[in-house]
Image (cartoon, rainbow, N blue to C red; front, side, top):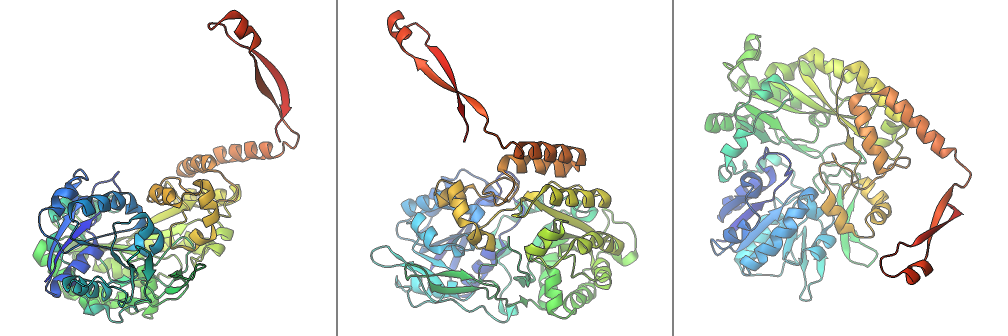
Length: 532
């Protein structure tokens, strides 16, 4: 069987490592189930110099070296691929994940070291690729869901790989391959008392995809949204649609997995990394979360503080948990059940409180639902964690004012993220020409600049520049309507200047310089010129 090395790229270098890579851990478990020999180099956990990759790649005769992640990992992946190819010329380099699926041909052009890549969902595709590697077969053209090269190096996509139907067929992730102690050291978060006192938190995934069509979000083949169609050059390429194939694990699968984690690793907190728990609950007609909560309690995972109705303290046992929610889809009765089972906080993508922005966003919510969702969630005992964004295409002073007014009344303090057109999202395709213009035609420079939307990259706001958005971010964070009003007045005054403004044109009279010698200072003649 093949010797497989997985490399987990460094992500969010400005923060400590917090999340075991669920996708890599799952694919590693699948490879092990097929009989392959698997090791992991977790660069994100160890945070060693990147040249360490060379030593790792030379530590064994790897048949395949696998690397993948989100687009925001591209900087590390690009450097890593060069080192991998130099250190392990015999290995097949396999890529996967969102960074590749969102723009496969571009990535194969920028990363000539890659041999083959898994596009979209890889649970079936990846084992087939490994089988070819094990058989020394470099012809991947008959495998669905891959990008590969021909003899000339040109990249080709095969037809789309259908998603699996029953998620419960998947094994549990191979957590044992990762340096868990590093992740456990960074378990605490400030979202709730229970999460702040957590000593051993682990992520779990209960579902894949989301039923919403938010223009800033991407799904990258996990929800039946991806097609393979000829592009302008006649080559197969990815096309993302509004197609949705909502899938979720059974409550039995999830609870059994969490119980295993509790008994094996003594976890005290489970963080659901699902895109949105409430969309899954709607897809199940309101039964999924209720069943999950009931079986969580039945399995003895309910925290003792919730069981006894007392304040949480260091003596509490059991497993608390958190997840994501939606302002227009949560139900008070369901939230109360979730709290009883141990849910501590839910992340709400409120984004904005402006009616026009919310209407065009594809979020399926409105300003009233956003506003009421905070009190509804708090009434259940669960803490709502709001996410705010500015810099939408329709952003205006009025929309910013609507958001500040709402968060002031709700008592929310949030430093907003910036609306960012990530590859694979509707915004990316809509504003691609503008993105290229902002990065002097260099698309790769944009990809390398992408982060977690807390920094300015490509601006898609029709009214505000990057400079203005940076100022508005601070104004929203301070909830300062006075500064907003002053900024709007200044902006309005600038817009009202319709007459050309004279500016000096500087020319140099070089005659005195020539006459006086090399130490003389040239005389400047200033002439007015209109700015057009």
